[in-house]
Amino acid sequence: MRKIVIGLSGGMDSTTLLGYLFNQGYEVHCCYFFYGSKHNSYERAAVLSIIDYYKGKELPVSLYTFDIEEIFKRSVSNLLKSGGDIPEGHYNDENMKLTVVPGRNMIFTAIMAGLAESIGAEAVGLGIHSGDHHIYPDCRPEFIKALDCAIYLSSDHKVQVIAPFARHNKTSILEQGYELSPPVPYELTRTCYKDQPLACGRCGSCRERIEAFRNVKALDPVKYERERDEEEDILY
Amino acid sequence: MRKIVIGLSGGMDSTTLLGYLFNQGYEVHCCYFFYGSKHNSYERAAVLSIIDYYKGKELPVSLYTFDIEEIFKRSVSNLLKSGGDIPEGHYNDENMKLTVVPGRNMIFTAIMAGLAESIGAEAVGLGIHSGDHHIYPDCRPEFIKALDCAIYLSSDHKVQVIAPFARHNKTSILEQGYELSPPVPYELTRTCYKDQPLACGRCGSCRERIEAFRNVKALDPVKYERERDEEEDILY
Image 1 (spheres, each protein chain N blue to C red):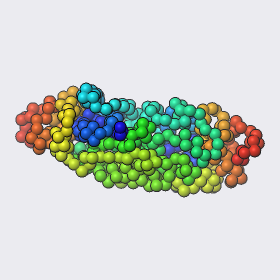
Image 2 (cartoon, each protein chain N blue to C red; image 1 turned 180 degrees about the horizontal axis):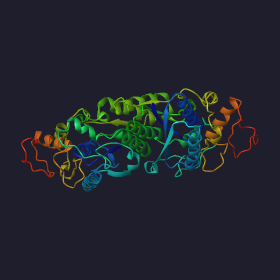
Image 3 (spheres, rainbow over the protein chains, first blue to last red; image 1 turned 45 degrees about the vertical axis):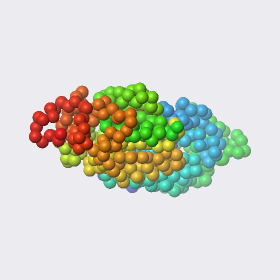
Image 4 (cartoon, helix red, strand yellow; image 1 turned 60 degrees about the vertical axis):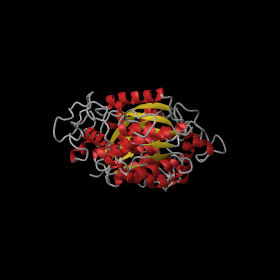
């Protein structure tokens, strides 16, 4: 069976990617990273329940957890426990740039490529999407292409990088996700950036997700702290 | 003052790079990685004494140590504590391929690029040289070029990768090193791959070093377990 390594953050994009790759016939080796983000423990709980869900469906999936807070202890980002508050507002707003973690995707992907080579997987899969491009340089297609080249050469042509949603937005990801069988367990996913059990509904990450569910006319099964009709500017 | 981040392994190549970068006017931020190699503790001792040497010369240098054994716990390589014996023989011999650690340079450089961006350094410097090309795909110029592109894009054009010795062999590195002032402290460097205090003089790494000193007609100040005239096939 063809093997692939992916980063599974517990959010809707990487969870859709996981479901998509089962449909492509892959044995999927998921990696989760503890890197010091505010929402790490909530993400991890989501990841564990998503893995359990697919194992219950007898799909070929495994999980590797990497504890790498050490690497980011000098990094400056509001996404990290060491940084300031998570900004609220739309995902494209300038203040969301405070959530960039320098080099994060490069580091995660390099680690996954090393694992891929060690276990004989042919690729590393990333759930990166076009909504990330504006804010995050390490989510843009030109970066993914350079990364693919670097990893292909580093691994002596054994491992490539794929990012099937790199030119799709979250709405398109949901449209594809709802076509998959077994159903993608969106009720188990965690998108919010904040350090609290209930998703806030206010940060850029929550808002972009809520907007995508509204666009596909589906009910987001996740509960939010903010009431749906609380303010006029809310996106759903 | 211009800042640069480099990987300092305690060997003669990265130590020459350090001296070279001081001469270029850089403030040098050195990174050392504990990644589970057999020779990690001996390398680290060398790194500490090299840093002390340059601090004693009042040069602008600092050290960051990253403990990332976690990342390589599933990696297969004889260079690691978890792997088989370090092969003996010439550096180009096929069995030296057993010492490849999948993705190592990609992971190290990604971590250093994240640090560079966080502290405002303009580049990551690598002591990679042409003697590494045959065995290690992650030391070849085509990989370095792709890595440079990926990191430049990942960092939103803030950080580049330089590897001044990528097309030089160890002999050429020594020739350049002996021109530098203050003198590069080759007596403090550690090149051997083995898990023992005294350099073996038999592994590919030792042999390549010994050959380089012989080529520049200098006495290698490091002591070896193997006597210099012990066998006819010895390289010095």
